[in-house]
Length: 200
Image (cartoon, rainbow, N blue to C red; front, side, top):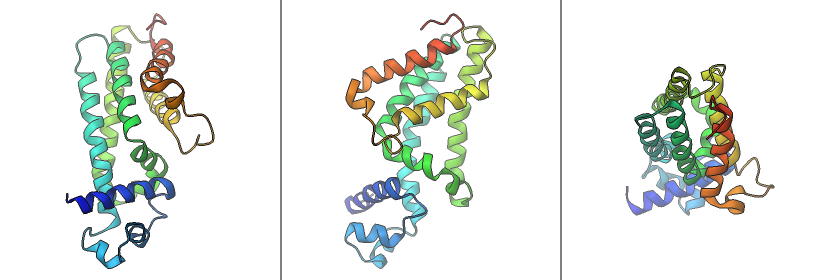
């Protein structure tokens, strides 16, 4: 993309994260960019195209990170821990994208133009499911846990810990302990509860 298009996408990303995709118009984006609405349409055909350009790079980082963890030799528990660490770092680097996905997901589900995003999201969940099932099968994760429930607990917890919108009035853990410290703390809480021996 041109520098100007990149600037517009960056501004739109911040607006979508703050107001929501549904509540943001092309005119809102144009005004924030110092453009007439008609001029914005000369750069992008729709608001949906802009959002696609925002979310694609996020999934371009997330999916390979998960695939790398799932491809590791070793136990399912080790793969799960590695995936936790990799995904945490991706989500921390893409806070606005994560906010958009989390808070606007219900609106995006019904829009045909975002079918590809839905497919990538479902694939990301399936990668979580794959390593958890592997850990249950090889005995390194607790046999009594339900794999689908565990996927939901992990992904919801990741969003919750990094959600600056919901917890904006609270201290930011990233500021308090730093990224490395927060990753270690999160892995400790998650993996120690999932491992069959209760250890890391």
